[in-house]
Structure formats: C-alpha cells, structure tokens
Length: 70
Image 1 (tube, rainbow, N blue to C red):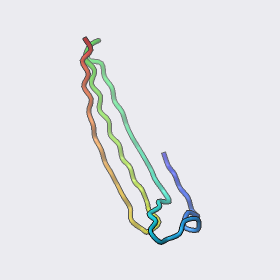
Image 2 (cartoon, rainbow, N blue to C red):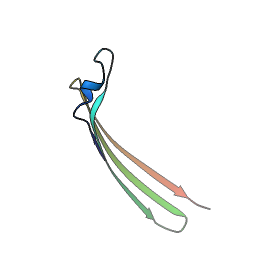
Image 3 (tube, rainbow, N blue to C red):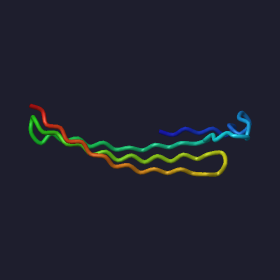
Image 4 (cartoon, rainbow, N blue to C red):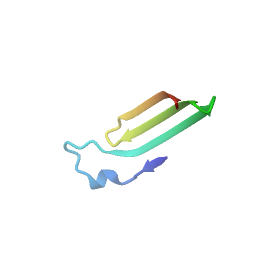
C-alpha cells in the first residue's frame, strides 16, 4: 500500500505537530499445512513512513505462526 500527500504542510500548523506525508507498506505471508492438524506460517512486513519534518521511519518485521488442531 502507498499513501502520499503533497500539500499536507499547508493544512497543519508546524508547532507541536508530527505529521507524515507518505507511508508505504509491503508484506508477504506464506502458509503451509504439513498435515491436516499441523499448520505453519511465516510473515515479512516492511513499513516506511516519511514525516514532514524530514525524519524517515523504517521498520522490518518477521513473525512466525504454528498451529496444531486437535
């Protein structure tokens, strides 16, 4: 997903505000059923946020999931 605004600086006062003008998110999910009872998943998520004060925030996340149904 991608969110972008080229005029957010004009709409928000500068004093005390931390506003972002662009945000991007990419993710990948993989699921596999090894047996009818056993499932495993892996997820990768990348997030990047650009703020109007010039600071850029980046985040990488990897998570796993294991489920046993009985």
